[in-house]
Length: 226
Image (cartoon, rainbow, N blue to C red; front, side, top):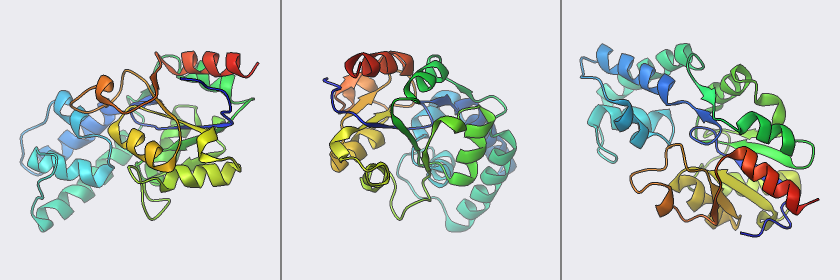
């Protein structure tokens, strides 16, 4: 992929910047225990992440990607999950290797955004608790706009906010939602090889390139724009 012309970078959060699986798993299994359900493995929860707390709650209850639980059961489980996750939020979650150094290198040269499907009530405390908040000029959660990833609106909003064409906004993610939203918005997209990429893994994602980590991405971008 050619990185020339990039003026801004939009990062996904869960699975791209921060490994949030341990805290999501802890909160999810507390919810399941309270609901009288068997716990889920981290491997299973990993497959369910990416569409926000409400969808994760539904998937944990049904152990299926698309099945709907009963309305009363779901409402009770969602409130429990929200409460438990607020307590667990940054207890075990940590930035992936290369993230802090990569963001520090990019911050002086590019406009940076964090675009996640996680609600802002969790996103802001998580970024603050992991000392990443100061790197981002814009933070969009799953409840910031009428539609979230995989719809293109979040990245179109980022481009407009930064005053750049979508083709000059580089999306960095780890999942099908990131790639679909970037493609629909007309943004180039690269993926990291770790995170929560879904059943097909990173090679199955429709991205322009795969980078080892955020620091490698920063080095490549800065070299291109030197």
